[in-house]
Length: 465
Image (cartoon, rainbow, N blue to C red; front, side, top):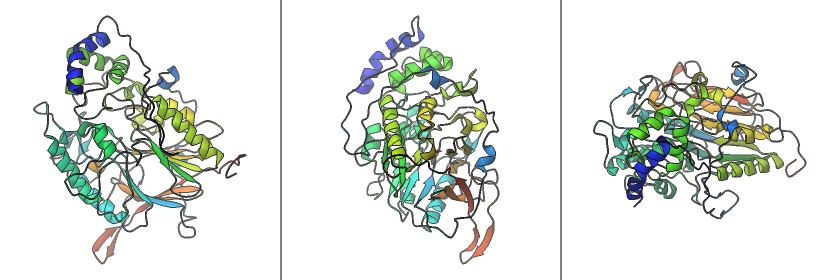
């Protein structure tokens, strides 16, 4: 029914967006679902469009705080137990296809090897007592859903089978408390409702692939330990792919994208059935003539809806009142300086709205880190306020002979310690090469450590002060 509706309106929509008039509504309202508990949220999707979300100037200059991101020490390595510990992976993006470059030809991808990295990650996770494990979006590749050579969707079973290969690896993790964030490739392969309810593939796999919490919410919070809060974001709350596979593109998000990106506007005008075919990512040069942070306005990115932003503010305010530290997870990047060469290509559409919440003077001390995926080569940036913006590297770009990328993260009162492996010698998170040592099972690489220091919490008049 949704595809039929999209087909009827596609040509009229293309005329509206690309014809004589390009006016459209940028705010939507929908029925807010009741919250089930403090951790749950309403699933509204209105998107605030403000000028401040579309520009970024950094008076400090490019090199500010980059030295801080390299700060490491071993003061707590063996003397104090962490408050909590978690396993971290992002962008496994597995597909049973031969190695090849990405769409822009800038990156070599080893798709089948990503499953090998996932197996190594589980083996490493099982050496630790984890409170939870998290995969930060893009678990299988777009090619599992779409045959680009024949310009058509593949049978759904292919995506299910290849997801099953990944889940059959992850199910061997001793920690069964897995969290999966929503990435663009999740929405290429599955509907939002499937991701909400959980995908079991193949049949009988004991570990379901589910991107929502027990209340069905894609953005939620939980307390991993006393004095800490974890916030999981849905960075595709506003996205042309919001509905998921074969549910039709979101017309409001597409109108927004066409306003911000002339390449997209032209493509929609020439392909009015795009609302139905969903054929945008990897199909045309959408980066053409985009400069700086304008490059975030591409089909594979998205943003946070108005309801989600209000909820984030409430959660951060509550954490500040209780003197709790906060770690946020988002598939998309939240800070321009964490993007490769400040390109903005992997950035949230409305990143500034999120930063305006996180960087307020009264709360900035509690925000320990924002951890992302999406940008396969990774990245680390520390803001002037001491918040770490960490981007995990992807297993599909792992260099031969290297274990990673994956990490076990230990949360201490004054630091986050990442212990694990990078993609190789050019890793941004774990610069350097892991040493190899002899063990009972043969030669074994020694994990590297990156410790990110946290600023002291300011005492506040309230709970936990």
